[in-house]
Length: 408
Image (tube, rainbow, N blue to C red; front, side, top):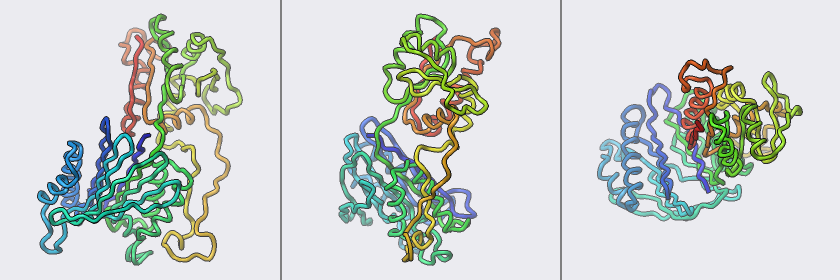
């Protein structure tokens, strides 16, 4: 089981920094998540929130009991003497590899928990640690569960404007239930929730707004072979590794596709049923999920990576009464029914596979293609190598684990 964690933030209008801080740590045996909300806004709030999450993350990673973590935070952060409030609120989640989870909340909106697409209550226990009153619970996550953590900038969305009392927890919970019940990706839920909060603020964010969506789902792997090895003896090694890989298998490059088909004793065919749109058509090899041309397709896939559609349709809430938690005369919500999507070209399909992956293994053959490189130039300056390096960097920036295996 993999915890897909996606988070989004907006700083208060007129401020350069967000007064909330989010941290995600993935260890060998656990995942630790922290959302801290500094009192006020701007630089001061950002410093206090960052300090809180740094302390929490460091101590939780060191496997200290939650009580000691909270005591350290309480002893480190001062209390506002004017408002008699702690300088930072926080939510801490620690999940072990088997799904066993500890949740500690201090003055942040309660975490939303969904199982089988429905909202469920978590059995919270109130505890007093020093001067702080905490809500603490222990439970076990399983595949399909979704947790949503928000700062009060989400529950306050629209306050004093379109929604005098703010969006509030209960309407947000119903809004999320619509999204979660349609099995959307974590990033789709996060984007939709942030857009809804932005809409209530009407472009003038009145409070630092942060949210984190955690979806428990199967781990996704992609193995992509691009370019033939320089030494023929490595042809079998590359093809065997690709065939034995878990998850999605992809081949980029005509010469590479011929090599893989030959080594695996399979037939390579051109797939003319796909509208390639200004690029070479894809191919077909039994047991390989996607076969494309090389350099041109990878270039287009890098460009499409940030904008490509995911595999689920976008869900949008249209009924403003539902959004604000008021009674509605008709259906509580409506799903956006977009027109039939334009068929993907090979680059968009490649980008979507990579976008949805958690781990990407790039099998990079180092044979030189004279069409892409001056033979007199160093090998690492070749177009293929530059593109693969750029793709790896972009995937890592999205939080993917990327391994580049070279065959030279």
